[in-house]
Length: 432
Ligand code: SF4
Ligand code: SF4
Image 1 (cartoon, rainbow, N blue to C red):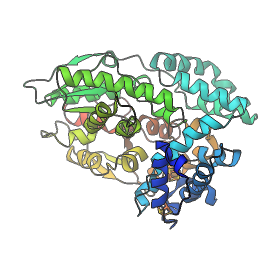
Image 2: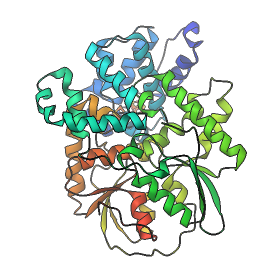
Image 3: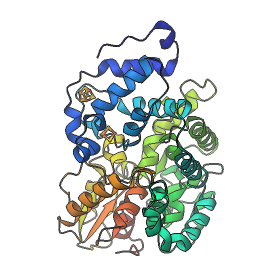
Image 4: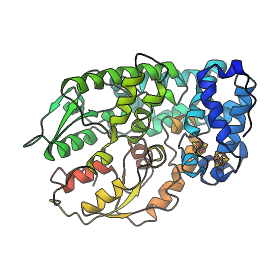
């Protein structure tokens, strides 16, 4: 695609980066076929190509974001299916991240939208606040239906509906500490215990620590690590995201320099995609660029890491058929497609893949709160495809997808690692 940015505009490194991305797009439109919002809404402006044109026009003309751009960029799930499909290697992720940050700096959203976004950014990345909010949500749930009638309140009602009926007890594994390997130590890893996941389903971290330590891996939960920053990053709150990124880079660098790390293990693929991008996000920060690139290089999804270990013969043969839901951040963001399925098969599960596996379930960070209508349409489509496999349960590797799919599906939804832990001698997942 031809661009006409001026030399002055290109002096801004973010514009320079976006210009390189824009020039790679050849307008072929292959990406439209796999874009969940185009497939659902059928509007070119809700396709990757349409959004690329909108972003180009806004950036090239040095314009502040307007309502049209904001509407169509807000509807983008950042699922990155378009990046998997694109034959020209267009890095849509970095382009839309730039557009979101530009929107945040130049567009004044309506009051209700601003308020709900600020609330989400204040609550979700902090486990104690999130836990308190979930407890409060139980009281507010009976009012969800009333809120549906007021458009500005729809995100609040979506939030109340998504809140689980009960909040699990906090796990001690979420606190900083070292979990020794059973027997001789073969590897040493840091585990990101996460923000929302540690509150919604602490059993995921428990299963990860139990399995890895049994396999001879020492697991450290470093002091000072926190939310990866993905939630606010996708809202365009760049500075807040970079604060989280720097904090984690510091925490993991200390561990690298003290005990040494073979990997930084992540159990939520949404977080993994962002951490693997820290090197890019902090490339302009001379104090952090190298450290961040090192962190990104060490970041591994838990299944990616497990695939590098020699696994024993499974202890339990549950003989279950599983529908594997590949989170967008897993398959499109990190391009991890083989490992989770192969690990489940090796552990004795029969793995089925649903139709339209490339399409998002509609969770996408805070998307199911901010865009509840589109999100619900995608969720219903996803659940129908998952249930059509005839499997006994659903396995996936991202807490956002687990919460979203479990809100509607009749099948139990568990994290892949909980099944692997069970097969290799750990506890049977509570939901199975
Ligand atoms: S990230 Fe997903 S929703 Fe957004 S344009 Fe690409 S395919 Fe469409
Ligand atoms: S598939 Fe790639 S090159 Fe083709 S229109 Fe989409 S982003 Fe552009």
